[in-house]
Image 1 (spheres, rainbow, N blue to C red):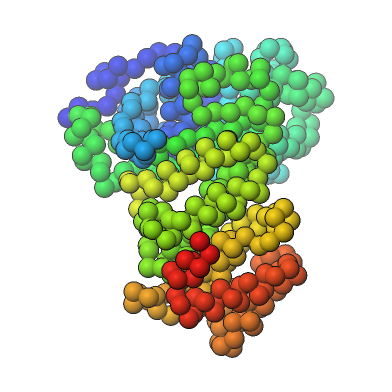
Image 2: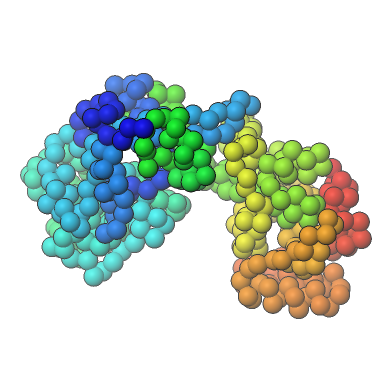
Length: 479
């Protein structure tokens, strides 16, 4: 078996046009895979310089393999099982700014640099007032980026053609807006002047993005078989699902410079990210939150098995296509396609997604992912969505504990205040008190849900039915 490097494996040389803050699994299996496809299928012709955002990371491992590695995509694509391996060669080099700060700052001096992409975890886009301009480097990611931008501005004497296009991929809503605000805070803190601020505003673009691909990461169980198949000793293989979606809130001239759509990729340039964020939360996370307790209390442990179950599968379809989809405002065919993609993802034969792993913090998840749909459905249809209401009753029942129909012990796990509340309510032995008590807890919902017409009685009815007939019979009653 050969070592993986540019001596043993061909590596293309391309102009360095992208600075990437972050070297983790997600960026390598998502952004760098997308750039690889753009290089292969369009004239994008760009390579990536990776910058490690914190002082400890993986740049040494990357450089040891000359930044070559393979992406292993697994899942269903239009019903076909796919398990592919692709060599990614887009990263030219990887830098640690904590030990190579001069090289890091010199990136700003390269005239052909055009893009900055980042994923520095949700906590990465934060303002740290202790950062100084002369730090080598600033500790926060926005601080490092501001240092780089200021150095570029000075190097090219404020040339408006030398601005950068910035795509943050951190998993926070409107990440671009947050990053831009934080850069403004550093411009002010460090007194960088009006002229630099005008250059940043006029020459650079910071665009909100939404990213979506499940990336389990390094395939520990299968790595020996993968290396055998590749005949390379690749210690940076990264596994991801087939599905990918990148929504970028930017004008069409940015799309022309970053022609991912021409490479046949699921990358959308849109005027507003919000409806796509809402679609993902509603049609991916929303069904997850309610299918988990319904499936678990029906004796099913894996998401895929729940989708394929003759009763619970119909329940999932009802919630997605008949209830939640009716509450969204994007074109129907777009929503239909997205929902079908979600079902393929749930059915991924390579991922054993435990329903119990989704059930932590079920009430706050329901509050953000399902409650808005419940309210919109009621407003639009004049009745409560039975599947979503039953999902909430299933969550409440799960927190009772006890024993499942198949004899397995139910061991709920959540924040102590949730556990204590449910324990006290179920100790009353009265399902009406349980329903009223949960729905009245404003620390969960921010309001008293007993005020939603018909909700309390509907929850009581389902709680009683689950106690008397079991989960599966209760599900059948609403199909």
